[in-house]
Length: 151
Image (cartoon, rainbow, N blue to C red; front, side, top):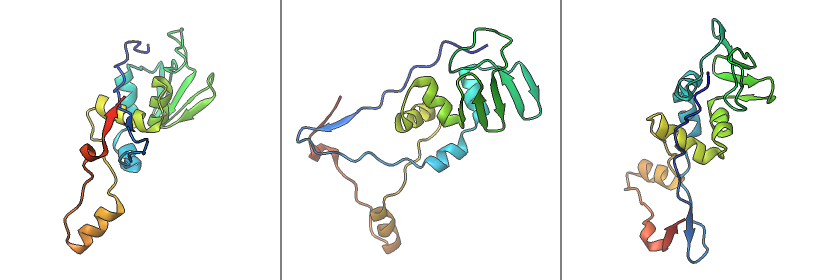
């Protein structure tokens, strides 16, 4: 049966500048994060238990639309991919997390990393990569200079 006591969503502050300039949000290394977290780990965290399994294939109730029958096999899992035959949607663990918590990609990734105790790896910006190659120090933006407030 699906665990209905889902962990709370990690709130990601929305950065707004008083001067209405956009402050860049650090880019996440989605490929690295997606490869480190497995669908089985996400399903275990959500409390999903299969009703039927055969090797890598498993079936059970859908955690998205909340199957009411404990014998439901509408939600199919094969390896690191899933598909719900009622919702007519499927994908990897990140798509599942986004649908369950109704979040977009960036906050869903941060939320999943925090809930599963993983590091949200960020991409190095091109300036930092060039500085590493040239042996220079990396430069960081000091957000106190931008006069921003979280909302």
